Amino acid sequence: MPGYQPIKELFRKVQDHPARHAIVPLECRLSWPVPMPRTSEGKLYLTAFFYAAPAVAGQPRELRRPLFQVAIDPEDGSLAAIVRCSLQDFAAAVVSGPVVGLLQPQGLAAPTIPDLRRLHEEFFATYDQALPLAFQDPAKLTPEALDVVSRFRNILERLIEPPLRPFYHALSPAFFAWLERVLPGDK
Image (cartoon, helix red, strand yellow):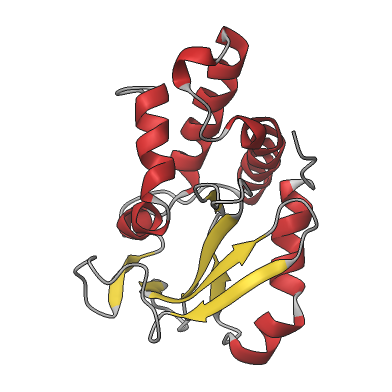
């Protein structure tokens, strides 16, 4: 089984990559990466998207459709691809306007910064355990492995902004179908 770099480090590398700074607008945020099905050579990649979330003083932050899709090699940490969605839109079937929703809908309490930091750290640690399990036959997963996948799924579901959920599912439908096969109805 290949060795994967820590997800936290991969996430930072993509955000700091020169290509990101050269072509992706500064107001764009990076989504949480999700595994892609293995290539014909058996290689696993992660995929994510950049989406705009511009800040306007006194206004709720709007979430916009993804602008770029990226592929990340979790073994060497390289940015394998960055594609403008206007060229090849992974989410073309997702019906929405340019604004898909608000970051923090009115009436909902925002999590505290310390709570978010703890959740992010838990996400990265759990992801490091879950990534080697991605796309394995659910019948062959041990109870411990199922627990890891369940914790990962629960944290990911808490971190995904609800208006962006359809875009995550369009990003890697096979991964979300695999999660459902592993943990039917577990949310």
